Image 1 (cartoon, rainbow, N blue to C red):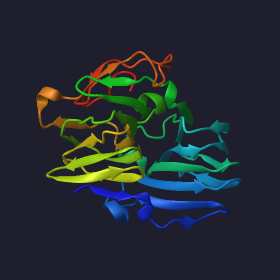
Image 2: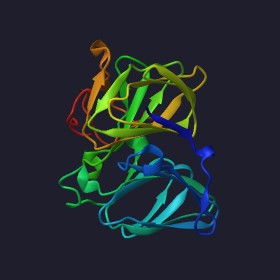
Image 3: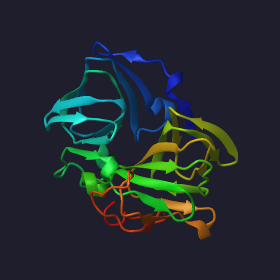
Length: 278
């Protein structure tokens, strides 16, 4: 059965001055060590250290606020529009003058999921608002890829942002070959998990194992927005009704209607191998 919880149920731990951490996905909580996920809060003028092991990889994005990353890849000004990929051995610090909330993910011992792991992996900072926006053929959803083999050079992890317009329902499906989680950024809705239904709200984490059937329905008042990450990146998606396999068409624009930073071809979520550009 998937594991569902909200960050407000987890006690924060104080780290450096002005920095707190909530360990969301842990081996103890989900009985799996594929993915780790933490939520950090940096108060105004706070700084947190970042140290990625030589056997691991990590990525993070700001949920609110702004911050400056200073490390082995230089200095980068970050906003909620950025997703940052940290290669093995990255060292640095993240500081915020006015405060920030950070969603920080990691894959320990990442070579388990990518036989070429560590070969020429580099730091990357992506502005997801300029990435291609893909539109679902069967319903009112939008997909933006965040962490992909094309962008970051490893098949150990893949991530995306999914936006459900109010009242949208996706088809029931499950995944084989990977475990994954969703973190609800905004909005609310209902998760259908096998034969059970559970309410979803901002701040929820839903951890899904292989073969767990699931789909979402967004509430009628606002968009349901979440990020989801798969480990490893390549997996099979099996749809209960094969006539409505989820297919994605390029809009030719980014999420704001401007020019996209690159092109991704139309594809279906039933593909085992990532299509070109993903």
